[in-house]
Length: 269
Image (cartoon, rainbow, N blue to C red; front, side):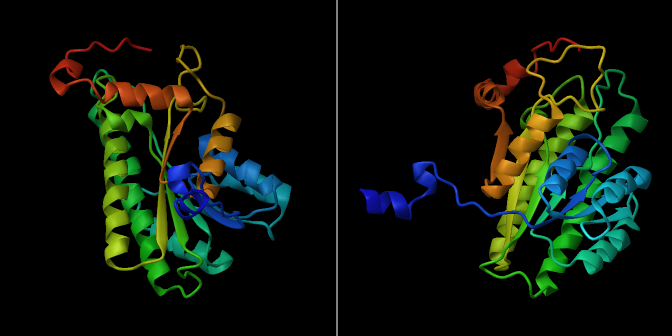
């Protein structure tokens, strides 16, 4: 029995862990991405950080030093973002983890098309542009092997598990991200590439995306969210949903038939 447990670690609830030594975070200027950067920088992890508001990245760089933190200005909705990505990779070398934390999302009951399309561009187009370029980098980088695999982690959302009427583009873009990760996981297996994936699905986190004047159920702090993310990445979990309450909610609402879900009125926050 013990032998079976050891040779089937996942079935026994035990995860292999991998200490993060070098991470690249796309979308590190604010929110969850910035919090993860702060936590890892304090632990001495070598970081490559990218985002639109480069002045916020410079503050982190000045705090921890250029030797530990490399930065680049990047707008993932622009084709030039891949040039910034390549420059960072050249500067810091092959990271253990690429964390795609760049994202936008607001409730949009009026269906303002500018807001909807900007959400899709950042969450979908931006992710595809950056993650695909990184995978192609892994293909030619000899530092990655079967023993040292590249790890791609993307912050999606529990909202991506079902369509949310108050935020159509946001929930749909997060669903696309999760589905794209599934396809990429199959793609790298077909091509025998040393890459693993983590789909990170938070619930409500107290970031700049939320309206501070309104109430959100089961709201989590950025610090607590960062701990879940780092632990999930180190354990190389395929899907991370936090916390247990959202795991339960997601499991339950997936049982609701589509015809019934479409008739549910979501209360505005």
